[in-house]
Image (cartoon, rainbow, N blue to C red):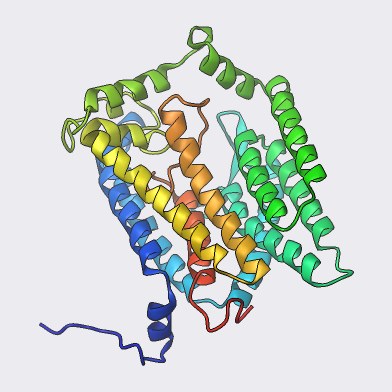
Length: 376
C-alpha cells in the first residue's frame, strides 16, 4: 500500500495549506459532521414518514449537501485573508438583496417568510447573511480604527441596522438576537467605550422586552418556558423524555422512540435523538467538541496582531458557539425554544452550506502566516 505524505518543503497550494491550516479545528468539525450523519440516519426516516416521503428522503438529501459543504469549506480555507474579505463583502451584498426579496416572494412557513425558491432550490438567506456580515463588519471596524477619517464604525452600525430590520420584518427575532450579540461582541473587541457598552446592553434588554410584546410567537414561547401549563409544550416534553430514556449509555442505535413523535427530531431537536439513542456519553462528547472549537478559535484569534483577523475570527467563532448553545439549551429546556439547527449535526441544506462557508473563512483566517497579519 502506498502512503500519501505531504512534505514540509512542499510549496504547492495543497502543501502550504496542509502545514498552515489548524488541523485540530478541521478534525473537530469533521467529527461533528460524522456524528451528524449517524443522527440524521437515525431521525431522518421517521421525519420522512410524517410527510409521506420515501424513508431515506432526508438522509439522501443530506448526503448531497454534505460533500458540497465540505468542498466549499476546504476551498474557502485555501483563501488569503484579503480574498476572504472580498468574498464576504460580495456575499453580504448578494444575500442582503435576497433577504430583502423574501419580504415579497418568500415562502411563508410557520408564520414567517424566510425561504425563497430559485429553480429547484429552496434557500434561506438569513443563514448566509450571518457569516458574511460578521466578516464584513470586522472589515469596517478594523478599517475605521486603522485609517483615520474612514467612518468604519458608522458603516458597521448602518449595515447592522439594515440587517436587523430585514430579519425582524420576516419576522425572525431569534436570528436577530444572534446577529446582534455577535456584532456587539465585535464592537466591544474593536474598542467600544464602556459608556456605549452599557447603552448597548440596555438597548438589548429593551429590544428583548419589546419583542415579547410585539411578536405573538415570542410571547408564546417565553410564556410556555416560564409556565408550561400556559400552552402547548409537546416538543420539549418529548425531548426531555428522550434524555430520561437514554440515560448514561442510551437505548442503542436505531432504538429510540421519541424521534417518531418529535416533528423536528432531525433538525431543531436532534440533540434529543443523540441523548436517547447514545446517552449522556455522546451528548457530553458533542458539547466537548463545540467547546473545543470555540476555545481553539478564540486562542488562535488572540495570537493575531491584525485587528481584522481578530475581529472576524472572534465574530465567526462566537456565532458558531452561540448557535450550538441555543440549540442544545432549547432541547434541554434551559431557555425558550428557538428554531435553530445544531451546527453540522442537524439536517439542513442552507444551514449546512452557510456553516461551511463560515467555518471555511475561520480556517482561512487562522492559518499560520509568516507575520500575524500577512496577506491581509
